[in-house]
Length: 365
Image (cartoon, rainbow, N blue to C red; front, side, top):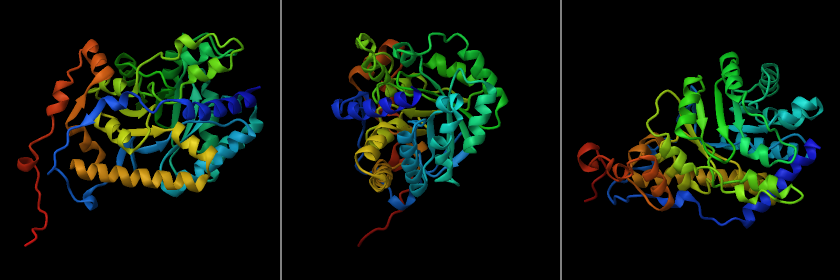
């Protein structure tokens, strides 16, 4: 039954991408263009610091799948793509492994195909400490992801209905595992209050996992015989809203996933305060509809295009994007107004580049 559900999730997720409109709240975030702000592309580094480690890029393959023969093959292809492009990768929820150790290889393949890469194990908030340690050991994981999916669970016909123990269990796991802990939503967003609580609980990174990408409420509703939960499909906050809501919080890293469609969305997320950005749906679509080589090409193209965006904006590192001027409009501006977030300040935060930056380029006579 679990294997069938994992295969259903992949099928519905791929179909959802072909049916969804391309628009989301990232379209409400625009860079102010300064025509003389550009730098040399060779001066740009995409390296970022996440969970106490340096990653070569701010892009990672986010949690997707595992637990069946079909999803194990998807994980194998994703791991090869991560290895060939040097980006971190997370496995999907390992609940199926806890219930049936026979499916271990559908997850272990991420490490087998990517022996030197940064690999994250993924568990739910009800996992016991023993299960968590087994997951970390199986993958020789560099970090642990704990996913929060209460909305998905209540729509899932066979899902959990008890969430009161989650905070206590997250604290317990965080205090007793040997790797950094990343807590992520699965598409409904993390509020500032939630991120603050995670920080105080010792969590290293909060992945805001906002609305705008794969919609698990819709997926689970399509699995219900009566499909009677459609009213909840728009639940939660978008990724840009979550990033703006959590701006300025110290003591915890911020990752952004949910609705990342292009290198421009990556740059937008970084400019809104993310340290790194995770992609699942767009990469899953490429793997399922094309092949591993196509995904490797896509990732390399995205990283090159991201570098060129930083070049035009005059940002030598992803972190410097947080100083670029942004215009916040539409539904995101409305959210900010209601949450007391000053978006006008974001439009005037860059230094006067001609005074503050050394532009020692070649003068052509």
